[in-house]
Length: 297
Image 1 (tube, rainbow, N blue to C red):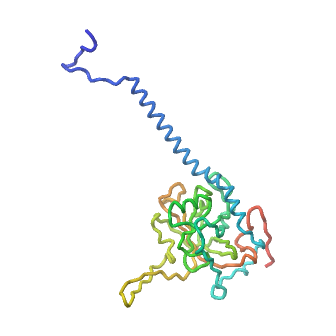
Image 2: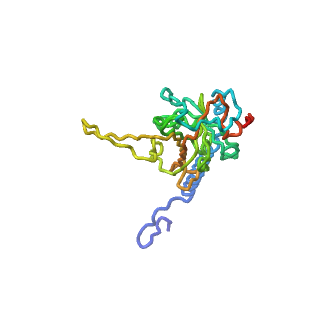
Image 3: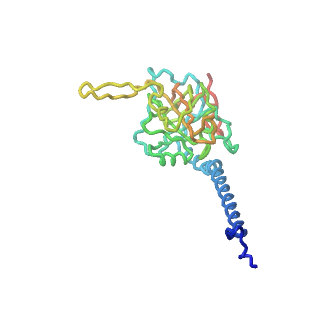
């Protein structure tokens, strides 16, 4: 009797897929999973390590193009003007800037000597460029290894809120150590004509859409008034402080390995000084390979 004639309880056996074919399918699926895992690992390595390495050279070129101050001697603390009534800080007009235009450098003294994600020395001078209200254009600016100014926020030294953002663990790792800042730390902005010295006073973790942190006054509600003729209510913030707000990606725990939250640091202008008078005493050197000397106090 042929094998095909064998029946069980009067029914023919269900057709079986050839074992060799099933084995090939499993092998293909296994290889696809391996390729997908390698792809994800490669993308992670590219984002985490390679992008920072690739922008280093361009970062340095752009920093070198920014005018070096003629006086790199560290000034005495008395050189700083802290009374903004007697000597109001010069306000930088950013209205003519286009997306990607560089207009200054941020230096955070406490980051000097810190390490990046692959144990490289953190570049302590971060070029600041004009950002964009369009997400993809803003990302393009950040991907050059620069920090980006939030359009429509105040400029350095101006009453209001000077808002900037930067990547934390790619394209320069510029704000990798933003969560390390504590109350009292210094944040310096170097413009064409002046140094603006800010002092950290607060931080908060928010959702990406919590944009109130870059409002002109993030700590007070807008003041609302009614038009006596039309009865229309108009609400505007009335800032009185000169703030800086720095933002970067994080998660609820403060880890750099996620971007579902934003780590936000607030600072307030402490003082300012002309670049012609040297550099602020909050830093020990203008840049790592060019030591400077202290003036006599």
